[in-house]
Image 1 (tube, rainbow, N blue to C red):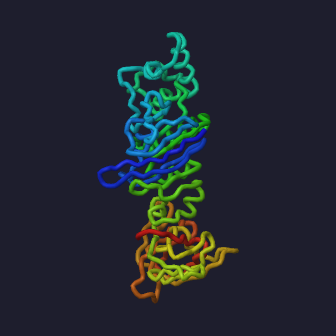
Image 2 (cartoon, rainbow, N blue to C red):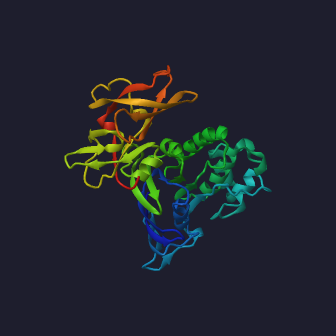
Image 3 (tube, rainbow, N blue to C red):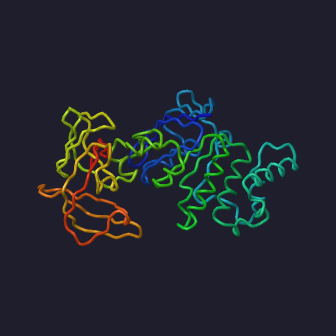
Length: 355
């Protein structure tokens, strides 16, 4: 099972120019609001039409501008879960699923298909409840049941947790993960939330202003996002202009630091460096080359389980602020104003793009 997308569509502020491939499992498109994520799903579903390009699902062409192919949404067999679930409030859970059944030879077969998928998604206890009287997680599973009842070849989820309160989000996310594991086909998840992307997906594409900047396994992209935009979207708070000297060493004048890259090849394209807040250490990391740097402590913010410390390199003119996140079990602020921290070479991220 696979999805191949290579399309262009002119939008108000930029041209959507997306190219990626997704196989079985969950692939996420991670990007800021307005970058073209939802429009990409709409083009795949057939509710929006690209200006040019090709979309192919499991060897079947859904759209090809050169050949004049543009299948209508009902013929694409694509399951599209909207943010608000789009349930019929005047119907029960069973009624919502039943009205979505297609390709059934009889009324009895339609009812059997609806009951089978309701049982599969553990909705039997609310089968006869109105859609307005069930929980957020049950609403989401009901919406998924309407998709699965017709054996969709792909499920697309557009910000599936954005409408949920924080206390519901974690439980519903776990429920969705279990459902998706049993689906066994392609799942495309659109989100701007890096945490849910990291927890749920095996692959991720980072989108910026209509273009997929990087694509790869979730672990690879979060470890080495490669672009300034990718670093920001994956949670890197420390980003500063940098330059490579051509010998594998990256210099970051604003931090008063230099490091030898061990994770990726450094070239003239490197324009910035990234450093995650928790990669500064109070002790030397065994087996990891690096060095200690002296810092001035500017501000300490105490959170529930950690501190966020604003630092500036001592004796470095016009030094930029660095943010250090440290567990309260590791360090407790005693009012000191200076500290020496170890920074491993392999924690730095050589990046390209504007800071």
